[in-house]
Image (cartoon, rainbow, N blue to C red; front, side):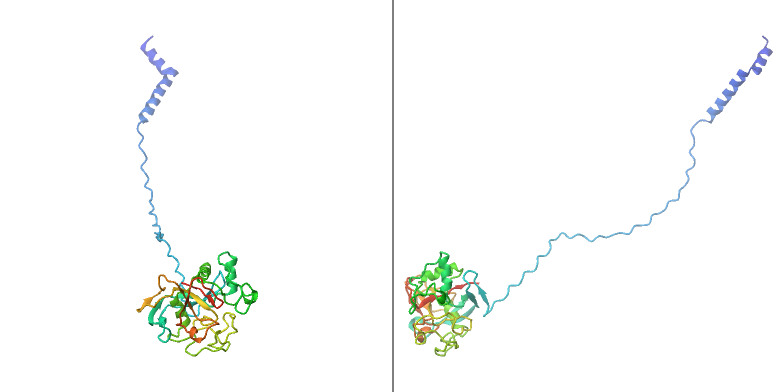
Length: 319
């Protein structure tokens, strides 16, 4: 075959033509390939955010809350009272103070007159009654009296008719046992005299310096010889003294805590008497005694085991 024929064949051969076109197309594709350049970045508008308001929170306190203010303690004074939840006795408040104890006009054991300072205390408004004492006996604490009669009455202790009369026929130890059961104690001799004076200082009697009177209900009415019916009467039958205390003179003698002994010569504070002795002091006189025994400074004394139909007691306590 001649060269011309081969060229014509080449030109006119459709398969070869198609092959050439494909080669050209591939070359174009290959030449267009490569690393594609990224489109230029479009600059986006950046909005500046509005500032948020600053919130300042109050600090939380970790301190303990303040305690509540204490309730003020009421101030006590003369005339204030309280009632015992044990025996129902009314107690009068006796304020602290200083007084001259004793007398130069009485027996020698009432002198020397000496200055005494006392703390405040409570004192039974009346003498302990039959009715009150029976409660202590019923509770198994107190011992019944050695006798159940009185001077003119065959039956006295435990009788309803005499429930408000003073307890009698009790010795010092039984009186002390009762006061302990009631949550109180026997008053000291100094406390008794201070309370009996009733803010009257150097007065002779609980009501002042006037002599005793037999008039029932009078300021200086008192149960004593020759006014009494030879026996006890209802406690509180006469007017009280200036501390609100009844029967600080007359009706029955009253046991106090002290041993009997001489007074000190100098000033003392809250005295409680001798450390020991043979007799205990009684104060106040009774229905059986004359006026001289009713003086606030008069000192009686007797043995521990002694009891009579003219002796009783009252109690005291510290605030």
